[in-house]
Figure: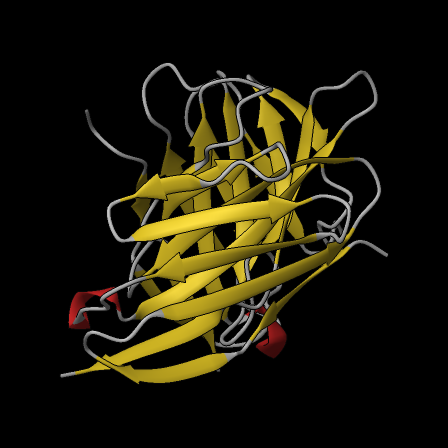
Amino acid sequence: EAGVAQSPRYKIIEKRQSVAFWCNPISGHATLYWYQQILGQGPKLLIQFQNNGVVDDSQLPKDRFSAERLKGVDSTLKIQPAKLEDSAVYLCASSLGFNTGELFFGEGSRLTVL
Amino acid sequence: EDKVVQSPLSLVVHEGDTVTLNCSYEVTNFRSLLWYKQEKKAPTFLFMLTSSGIEKKSGRLSSILDKKELFSILNITATQTGDSAVYLCAVSLMNYGGSQGNLIFGKGTKLSVKP
């Protein structure tokens, strides 16, 4: 079974530039999550989708971050404009349904903002 | 504010040692507690615990939850160098209606196992 796919794996940009990350969850997984993991910290939820609807985006900095999952399958996370403090690994995860605890994580996209 | 606290933050042991990692939590609407292992890549799932006092076991790893005292432990016996990783504890919250909400993660415990 293919895992959660993410791209790009690494990205270096200057502050105020924009960046987009892509995630393709495990086939058949209805729930998709984007987490931000700053070095030395645990992952922090940015947004959770159930199919193509947003379940929780309370911790998403909406002035600069946006995410979509238009067809209920793959998703993109965009940052515009980026700040230095956005340097982190952006992890995408998926789960089979809304009530299952086990999340399957992708390998992450490491962002460095200079 | 919901929080998950792990201790110790880092730990260095020698192969063959037994280690205990701790996770305490203060959250509203607890649903379950999960342990993940994170090497240099994605976190991989270890255990999900929902009931107090029932030990979950997988090989040399085991975990138990105490919902009265609000903590969990992860034990690793006969450690090997391949156990070196960051171990993340996360608490799953319950949304209104009983469905699963957000996962709140601790900062992790970095375990280094020396030969």
